[in-house]
Amino acid sequence: MFRSSARTTLPIAVMLTVLLALCGVGPVPAAEKDPRMPSGKPDFSGTYDAATLTPLTRPREFGDKLYLTPEEAEEIAEQERMTQALRSQASDPDRDAPPIGGDGSPGAAGNVGGYNTFWIDRGEEALGVDGKFRTSILIDPKNGQMPPMTEAAREARRKRFANFRRGNDGTAWWLENDGPGPYDDIEQRPAAERCLLGFSGATPSFPSLYNNFKRIVQTEDHVMILIEMNHDARVVRMNSEHKPPEIRTWLGDSIGWWEGDTLVVDTKNFRAGVQGRGGTENLHVVERFSRTESGDLLYRFTVEDPTVWTAPWTGEYVWRTSEQKVYEYACHEGNYAMGNIMRGARLLEKDAMEKKGESP
Image (tube, rainbow, N blue to C red):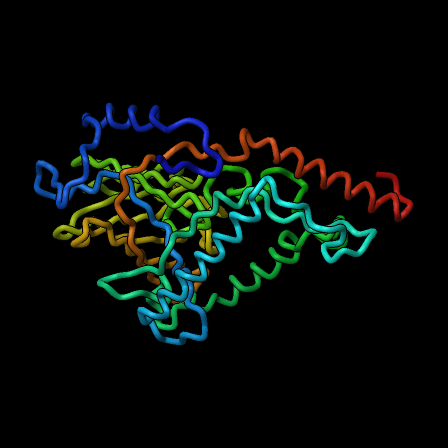
């Protein structure tokens, strides 16, 4: 059975066909143990599943402990199996509706629960590298946490959360704040919400709640890395130079080279305000791809942005080879939800102003 996205429609065959034609290569053959390019360099072309139960940052109870015992890893896997069973039960269309109020009390709306959690795909086990299970994807800093933010970055985040990132309580709370509100303009909404970029990140790419497949198409001169989440496609120019800094893109400008059998990708020149985890246009990412003995890819990344973090941070996890296909991620099914978000904000503002006796 082919695995498909949560928002699956048609395969992305058209995109890949065009890329393959432009690159002058045919369909990728069945996976080999150690496929090589004509130049002798590794050929990473193929599909990979990057789902893992290992979190990006380490649970604090583990401290500086990087590895789990086999028993701890199995306990995490068992907890996920139990969670998946509960999700399956919650998604059963024949299940009974919850009582009014959730606890049987009358007069209050009950929580109907999730109805489509079948698409959640976080993986089935903790991350294993060299036969050892990891407590976190981050390996530097040693505590598995993000490095401290700069004072300026903390203040900018505080203001952003005050004006844009408050929970939905059914009121137009933003009218109480000075300055622009979070729903004044569609372009103020996050790039992922606008279906411009995936929320799991592309440069670097992090595991997500679902849509964890990656697709690589490789030639001697270019490497295309397709991220299933929101169909972000990166094109890495091999043995090239970065474009001028005034030329900035959503996914950054990526160039690559080989260090032995390791593919190194250097990316900078990002657009401002579009990077996950808080990076700015000053973000600089270095990624390393290397094949393991099993044929999987070990993906390692180092992120630095001195305007946001006081130190660089590094993580690594495994992209497992897969024979399954990657399908189109049709975000918002045409993004119809965006109009509803803005219309809902206008209605809340209207209610708030009428309560104050003001004219909407």
